[in-house]
Image (cartoon, rainbow over all chains, first blue to last red; front, side, top):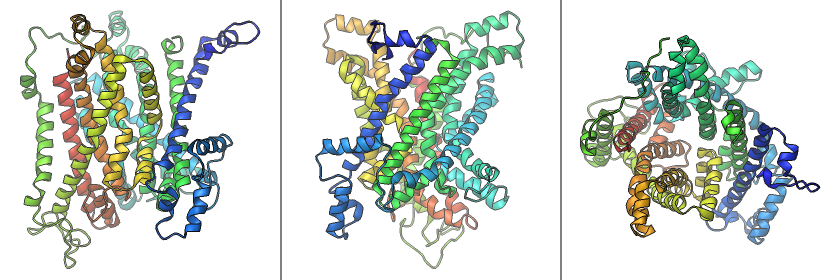
Length: 333
Length: 289
């Protein structure tokens, strides 16, 4: 895509002239490739309003709302305009950083959801950390002991995790560690940094469990492939220490699929935090969304959905760039 | 640590491969998955026979009773029989889970086959749509859609119909693209068979197995989503029983009556284990050599 841009004066491709390193060229191309996805996400959130059956303004306000209020909301949502103009207005205000106005609070949507962002961001970070520290040892363990008891135990664990509702797991964690043992707060977020971290440990573990089984299953297969690869056989045949083979040859090459997998599943993990925030009474983005649903506050639901999707696009972009950093075959393609 | 797995790589089987049927009977994974799933489905279907009580009939004189001969798993806060509710909830959740997957499966496989075989502009457009749908966190999009189109089973079917086909489309597309380059497809085309015939009679039977295997995990995913929506009050609406709303009701009593929330959760986990084993077993026996 970047190669298509030409600098006017010499006719040399823009990318080759200014982006001299292939790595940088990959970064720019990858960023440009996410632009259509961002546009698509904007279109989908725009179409959400049109999916409301009947007259959206009437549906949102309820049957008994005065018709003046319905007309005012219809105007506020821009429903009295032709659809292409509605889309242009939506796109125009988003481009100016305006997510719309909350029906319930009569305040900018951004000001309603912004307070929850740091909490949800931290929760996703904690959950990602847990996902990695649970997955990597268990998957390696299972792969090293393929078809033996340890492998079967890990597989059974991941099978049970696959069908486990994360909110139910959260309730069990609360009963065990908060109600019975008093190790963690039952809910809430605390006021200091350490209190924040302390109160995010159980929810983070809970959100991680949602993707850990899938990660373990895929990483186990990935490790088995690496273990069977010729270069591992060569390394062993050369007489390298087993620990060196494990860490330098196997782990390094198994790291790449791990990061890729994490990128693919991070969207699922982020989505899972919505219900987990409800279970642990955390006032993040997910709670803002669920509260907005209770208030039938469409612009907030729309804004939160958009923010979540943009967050996922950025995270996937980052994981792709990290993978490219780890694996020259990707960035030099 | 000692180098564990054989240096020569995976062993190669010699001789003719046993038939699918005999492989199925010799796969413990598949048999365990099929047995567990069949048991759960049978229990759910037999709910009116073995449930003994209506799932909604209340007995306000005996709330929060422990297990007894009259109520095998006890009663909830308004005296409803938990065993009956569990069975009827399973019936609803399994039914919604399976039905919600039917349309995404058929549409996804169809569009993936067409895109993978013909390529071109339609393929580009469809794959960009797939990218956009996958950019949304699954639960966020499902919750937003159910809110927009209306809560309950109706909303669940629409939400999954709009989003869930993308994985099937992507998997089937890549399978079809691989198959298109194989010799026997070239032979079928060269032999003068029409493209439609090659596509639906020769390629599809080979690519659809992957979609069938995935559909087992997908049903688990959908049941989890239905249960989650039920927990949030956006799914199957009361008084109809649903595992999610049972957990949500039971959560109010976690200090005193923990089984109220624990039991329906275990039912979800067991269903997930059964269907996942079934999917793994199918993957083992259907995997092409």
